[in-house]
Amino acid sequence: MNWHVADDPEEFRAFLGEWLKEHAPKALWNTVSTPFQGHWGGTKTPFPSDDHAAWYRTCLPLGLTAPAWPKRYGGAELSIAHARVWSRALQDRELPLPLVGFGLVMIGPILLAEGSEALKDEHLPKIVRGDIRWCQGYSEPDAGSDLANLRTRAERDGDDFIVNGQKIWTSHAERADWIFCLVRTSTEGRKQAGITFLLIDMTSPGITVRPIELISGASPFCEVFFEDVRVPASNVVGAENRGWGVAKALLQHERTVVGESIAAGGARPPELNDYTLRTHALEQIGRGDDGRLADHGIRDAIIQSEMDMAVMKLAVRQANEKLEKGQHPGTVSSVLKLAGTELNQRRWELAGQIGGLDAAGWDGDAFSARDKALSRHMLRSRGNTIEGGTSEVQKNIVAGAVLKLPKGS
Ligand SMILES: Cc1cc2nc3c(=O)[nH]c(=O)nc-3n(C[C@H](O)[C@H](O)[C@H](O)COP(=O)(O)OP(=O)(O)OC[C@H]3O[C@@H](n4cnc5c(N)ncnc54)[C@H](O)[C@@H]3O)c2cc1C
Image 1: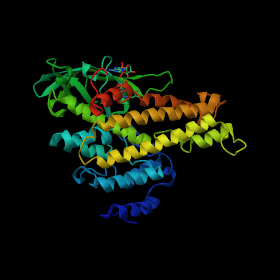
Image 2 (image 1 turned 120 degrees about the vertical axis):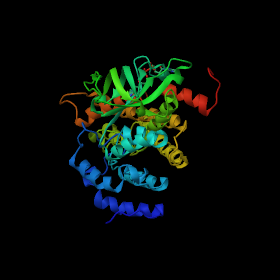
Image 3 (image 1 turned 120 degrees about the horizontal axis):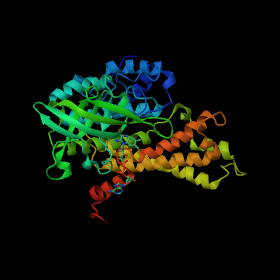
Image 4 (image 1 turned 90 degrees about the horizontal axis):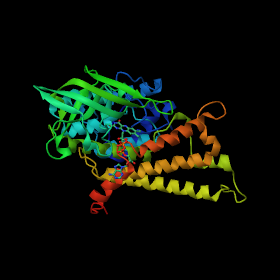
C-alpha cells in the first residue's frame, strides 16, 4: 500500500488505518504513544529495539518524524489538521512516534519560529533525522522556579561568547550532543533583560558533564559545568539579551507536550503496558456480592480518575484545535501541564494504594516485575509536577495571566 495524503482529513484517517496495519511493526502496537518514549536519536542512544529501528526507517523518508514541518527540512509538510490525524491515529493504537525527544517538541518549534535561516538550515534537518539529541540547560543551583536568577555568564569575545558557569538537573546531558542554554549576557536592568538563548555543542572544549546519582540508583539528571567554553555568537536564538521571551515560549511547548503526553496515556515502562486501575483492583480486592469491585472507596476513586482523564483528553483536543501552525501555545500550556501532571500523580498513587504492600516492592524476587515497575513509576510521576516548572509556578501563571488576579491575592 503506497503512502498517499488525501486532501480530506477523514479520507486520510481511513487510509492511515489500513496503512498502519501494513507498515507499523506488530510488536509496537499497544505500547506507548508519547513524545518522550521511543527512539531518542543522537550519537549516543541506540534504538530501543529492532522494531523501533524498522518503524523509524519506514517513516523517515515520508517526512513522518516531523509531520507538520516543511519538506525542505525533511518534514512531511502536512496541514495542522492532517498532522493531528496522524498523531491521533498513533495514539488510538498506542503506537510509538517514529522519533521522540527535545529536538522535535522543544527546540525545533522555537527554531522554526525564531531561529535565523542559518540555524534552521543547520539544525532542523538533523532534528528531523534524529542525528543529534538535545538537552535543556535552564536550571541552576540558585535558579529553578526563579529561573531569571541564572548566573551562567557568556561574555563577548569577537565573534564568539566565552561561557562560564553551571547547570543542574539537566536530563540526560550525558547522552546529548547539543544543549539549548540560557546564559547571562548582561547584569543591567531587570534580571530577565540580560538573558540570552544560546545553542552549544556538547563536544566543545571546557564542558564537563557529571551524572547525579539518585536514591533509586538511576542517574537521569546531570550537572553540566562550563569553563571558558567558546561558542559562536551566531548560535544565539533571537537576539542577545532577548532570550527570556524565547525561553518562555519553549517552556510553553514543553508544558503542552507534557499535558498531551499524559492525555495520550503517559510514558510508562513495558511492564505496565497492559495496566489498568480496574483490572488491578479486581485482581487485588475482588468483587462483592453485587458483582462490583468490593471496595466502594477505591471504586469511586477509579471512576473519578477515569473521568478526569476523559476531561483531560478533551481539554488537550480543544487546546490543539485552536493552535495554528508556527504559533506558540500560550498560557493554556500551564493549565494543561498543571492539570495533567497532578492527575497523573493521583492516578499512580491510587495504583499504589490498590497494590498495597505489593506496590512497595523495589528490588528482589519477592515482588513481581509489574509491581516493581509500578512502585518506581509511581515515584517518577512526582517528578512530573516539578519538571518544566512546578505546580505552584503553573498556578501563579494561571492566577496572573489567565485569571488576571492581582499579585499576592
Ligand atoms: C524529572 C525532572 C526533570 C528535569 N529536567 C530538567 C532539564 O532537563 N533541564 C533543566 O534545566 N531543569 C530540569 N529540571 C529542573 C526543574 O526545572 C526544577 O527542578 C524546577 O524548575 C524547580 O526548581 P527547583 O528544583 O530549584 O525548586 P525551587 O525553585 O527551589 O522550589 C522549591 C519549592 O518551592 C516552591 N516555590 C518556589 N517559588 C515559588 C513561588 N514563587 N510561589 C509558590 N511556590 C514556589 C516550588 O513550587 C517548590 O515546591 C528537572 C526536574 C525534574 C524533577
